[in-house]
Length: 375
Image (cartoon, rainbow, N blue to C red):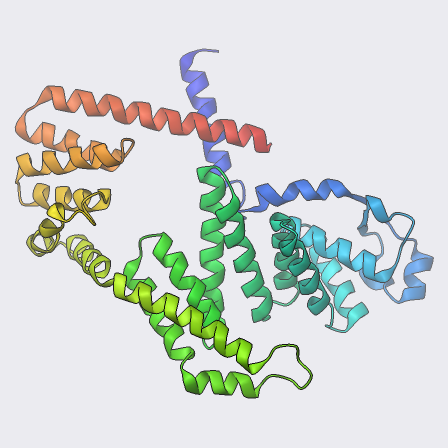
C-alpha cells in the first residue's frame, strides 16, 4: 500500500468514526449487549399473553443469567436494557409497546430504582443505559432525565481518556439543558447545569444557572417543597432545609468567584463580535494577574485582536504564549502562519505549517485507532 492509499484509508476511518452514529456514548454501552441472547417467542405463548400483534416474528432478548426464569418483568427489563444499549435498535418500538401494554405505564419507576442501585454500586455505565432506557420509554419524565444526566456526569468524572470524558461531558450537558427547559422549576437541574457550564469555561451561562438555582431555593420555594412531601415519606423537612442550605452556600461562594471570569468571557464576546480594541482593553490587564494569566484562551483572543488591528509583533507574542500553555493548539499555530506571511517571515511560516501537519496527523491516527477498536 502506498502513502496516498494509507492516508486515504486513515481519512476514511476518521470520517466514519465521526459520522457513524449520532449516539455520543453508544460506543461505551454497546458492550452490554453481549449479556443477552435473542430468540422469538412462540405465537401460542404470545396469544396467551395478548402480545401476538406486537411481538410475533420479533426476536426478543433474554439475559444469559436468567434463561431459566422467563417472566414478564425479566423480559421487560431485558428489553429496556437493549434499548438503553442501542437507542436505534430496530425492534425498540415493539419493545416499548410491550412494556407499555404489560405494565400500564408503571414500568419507569422501578427502572429508575434499578438504575439508582447500580449507580450507588459504582456501575455507572450500566446506570446510564438504564436511565437512558427510561427516557426512551417516557421522554417526559424529568426524574429519568435528571438521573441520566447525573450518571453521565459521574461517568466523565470517574472516566479516563479525553474522548471518553468529552463524550460523556457533552451528553451530561445536553441532558441538564433539556431538563431545565422541560422542567424549569427543577432546582437541582440548574445546580448541576451551572457546574457543567463552569467546567466548559462558559462563565456567563454558569452564573445565570447558579442565580436561577438560588432563586428556586429561597425560603418561599423551600416552604412549598416541604408542603409537597407525601405523608409517611422518609424525607424530613429538616433534611431538605439542611441540604439546600449547604448547596446555597456552595453556589454563593462560586457566584462571588465568577465576577472576573464573567468579565473575561464578556471580553471574548467583544472579540468574536469584531470589537477588537474593546476586547484588548478588557483583556490586557489580566496578563499581569496571576489568577488568570495561565489561561491560554486569554492569549488566543488577544492574538486574534492584535492581528485584526495589524499589531503583528504583539499578535506573534500572544500566539506563542498560547502554545506555551497549550502546545497542540492549531488555532494559535495558524495565527502564527498568517503573521509569518504578513511580515514576510518564511521561517515562521514553514515551522508552524509543519507543526500543524504533525498535530493533525497525530489526531487522525488516534481517531483511526479508536475507530478500529470500536469496530
